[in-house]
Image (tube, rainbow, N blue to C red; front, side):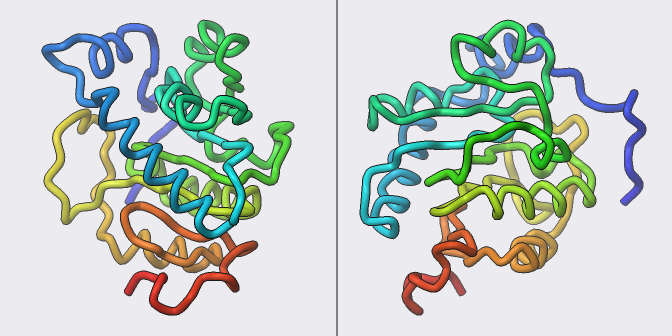
Length: 206
């Protein structure tokens, strides 16, 4: 698939977040849904790490809806968000722990890893092949527990923002995750290379 020029990238400004996250007529992510996802990710991570989740990296975090959901579960959890939106970083950076950057920047951002849980939700299907590969490899190296990699494929029927959507087949993502040393667990979850040896055979996905 051809890569888009930098000027053709999506614009994540105040109007974007108003439309997709706040306007009841057009928003696609409900707080209850994020809370359920966070509860699943935390429970699975703690099952394998055998201790409470202490820190989380959220790549492409937007306004950080995961932060609130995670802190409801683990109030002492240290949250770090990374987002390509300059508006988000300026508006919420200091108060919500969000750094300005994208998947390609992870290796150069001063992140205090490794992280028990790395979240990348609704991001991978909007970026180039090279960005996915580089970003997944970087996230795999930053995780000591699990990764929540939520991406839709050409085989999925989903509602929401289709501007810039890159319809890759599921096998493409599986191959990219496998090259990064990740072990699929199902339901968006993958074990990092650091914990992969501890994953039992029947805990692994097909």
